[in-house]
Length: 505
Image (cartoon, rainbow, N blue to C red; front, side):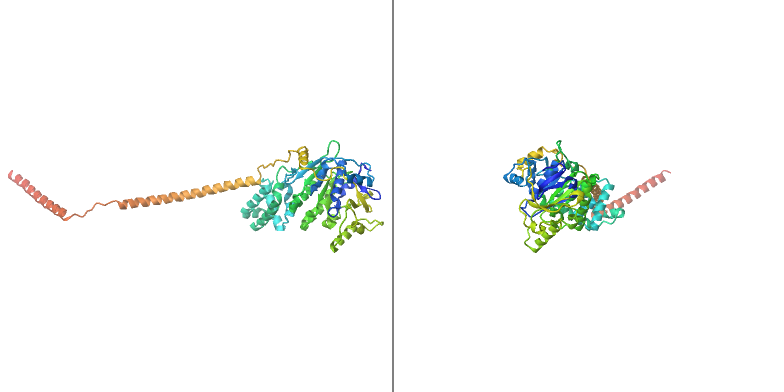
């Protein structure tokens, strides 16, 4: 049943296989709640891992974590294997690395603002052309001035610097309006409130850590804890889009390899597209188209094919369709659309069978020779070999402690970057301005003190008593008598002197 170059999916009128050489042609797993999508996802992920292909999967409910434990061979699993004649069925476990953007249920996942880049960040923030232009100016200004952009506080500080120096910056880089900077800051606030401050930073994820294999040739299954993340759809979309874009930029062209280099499973894929701007959908479509040549397969898991934009849906070649409900006209239309996406089987009506499938059953169509889709057939999906259901918290912690990246990403690195440089610059400018202002105040105070001293001196002189030149009547009488006596005495003396001289002759 198991073949070295194929993944066994289950049994229809024949064994259904997904050829590894077409694993990078992307895929889709859909179906209503409770129809068996997660079990199918786990079975396919186990098949890729066993073939030496690393797998990355977003785990919305935590059920996929059991893949790290040896399967317990539950009654329904054994019965299913017997029903489909799966004679090679055996319990197994698969090498697993747990990741978590919030760092609580796995190793933290981070990237830097610089690695995200202005174009992708603008798409995520849904910025208009003017706002995107300001963001590009900010990144260019940071490059020209040697400012590292690592986390959100770096970008926020940079935008403040841009706004404060808008006049000078506009001359060199183009017009910058404070109102536009404020609009970008508001968009960043939305992302930050959803946990973006934890996603952006260092140490940044090394893509190679998602592409590990064991010594015995199994591919590691990287599981992203997404139960909390799905409540932050913008952050979820930011992460997924960055990851695919990063892979496209980092990995070399390989064309169509014998097996994929890496396979992604994005559960609750509608979160990536709900209320998404056209620019973001276009970016996803572009990445999905181009990343195939890098040897990367992308598999979307969602309740209904209509959750995926048509342009993206057209790129998904390998399809597993579980049961859909069709009670309303809208649901009936969705069933017809899902049925029309398959290569018809003359033995039954695809639209009718979609609503009649039991739990664990699915319509399967995959690429066969020359890349032609197989005729759709009703298939009973094989049971997983690993544990079905979530790990216990202590089991998860044990896997995390023994993972090959233990200790690599667990501590936040906050080296000097734009925030610290601009904060220091601001503090120095404020200190210089404060010193100049204080010097001015001191000069004014010295001038005021000098004026006050001069005024006090004048007041002191004015307050001293002056000697009076006016004489009292008594003083005047004495003065007059003295003058009279002096005049008479002088005259008498003069006469005596002259008389004596006369007599002496």
